[in-house]
Image (cartoon, rainbow over all chains, first blue to last red; front, top):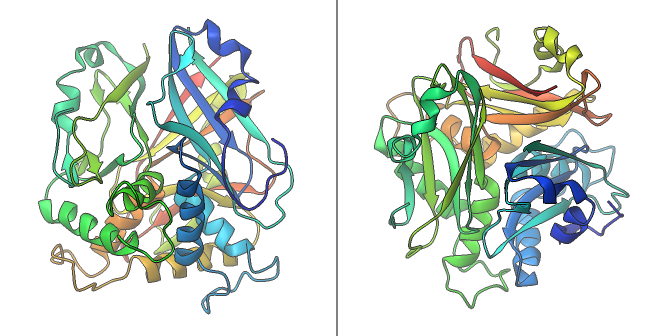
Length: 131
Length: 131
Length: 131
């Protein structure tokens, strides 16, 4: 997954374009797992980009930088909030596959949450189960 | 899933009553996926209903309506908080199946979080894996 | 899982030591499910222990004891916050298995979140899918 700026990013197409096997699955589950503790995967609205910027604003307020109770500060002020967001939002998502396609709702898309200022490339492991 | 008022709802029986295949699975996983970005699925206590109303009160405080940093406001004051709750709580749950039954703990039940004031009907996709 | 004090605990080795079958799986998923509504499973940094104590401090602030809106209070002041943390962090995690090993990132470990003061023993159900 290419390096992305801090914030939430809609990656549905970037993910499915790399999963040619999807089309062969009649019924199953796609599991996506991000191998990092300062980024996250979640599902949310695929339409209005202000949902993504509002999510970023919300989590910046409710997992703030420089909280007086942080001891883990030597990796930068964005690091501990990134760990918190990672556990709140989660490291993995699983999505049903039906007749060769992700069975997402009309308004659902896959989000990558990049919680560091300069997170660099991120690795996502995709596992397909089904037949 | 029938339309439900805003709040958390215990839906364990409503779900399992529709899954006659469960009884044939000796060992596996039930995956439930809600196809909406303003509702959620989670697991919590199946006994005292005040756990559900306290959860609702909590999330209403920590994902408030009318926050001054929201830009996504044109779908109503309950909409952006609903998107936030959906990502915090999650769109899917997976539960072990053992000897034909969900292997939940004694106090665990399946919750649907309805985060809109008038969310209408909600669709949940159930996928069973196992043998 | 042995009784643990309130807080976040790195349990990667305690889990994998009990899963001798892992080594036979070339490609699959490990699903872990905790059968309790006042404890949680999540993935976070496996190195600096202050990440775990900062997570505990954070969730104690953002899922506080004795909030004036709690009605579910008769099981102790740590009980309702524990239910909230359980739903925010989640009751299950799933991790890819590749060539007989958990395919975690370099810095990722499995955390058990013990959210009660005296939670006692906790049961985790492990389900392996794959071949």
